Length: 161
Image 1 (cartoon, helix red, strand yellow):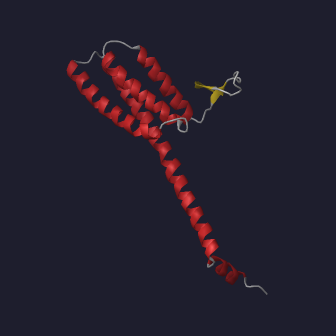
Image 2: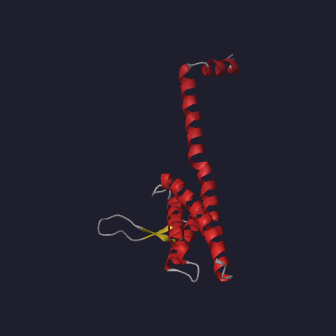
Image 3: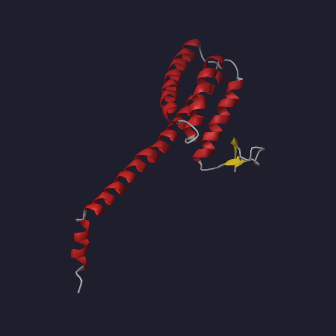
């Protein structure tokens, strides 16, 4: 009769098995480190963008003083510049949420000094990027267009199913 327990222990002692086990462990760690925290960071950046935009609208609606605006602009600029620097490292076609967040932060920084008295054209662009982030975080996929003359498919990054 075969002793299954000793056969399993013997197979664990073989070098090829340990190598396979080690490679699998490394791959698992890389996948967890690469993808898991990123979603949390993306959501935190999204919430930060929304919070700053809400604060901007409140200040504008209450016709805040120059001192209040200056403090807000300085704080918001620092926060957005920090976000942009971090996102610039990882944003791109492979990370569309971070790409839209990067664009939103860039647009927000650009519109900040112009938004004291009234809404600006940049605000619509900012809202468009934030909506794209929201849809991507919700798991929605962009709407694909028909193939063009080159045979490739395209999608509208701002329309979602």
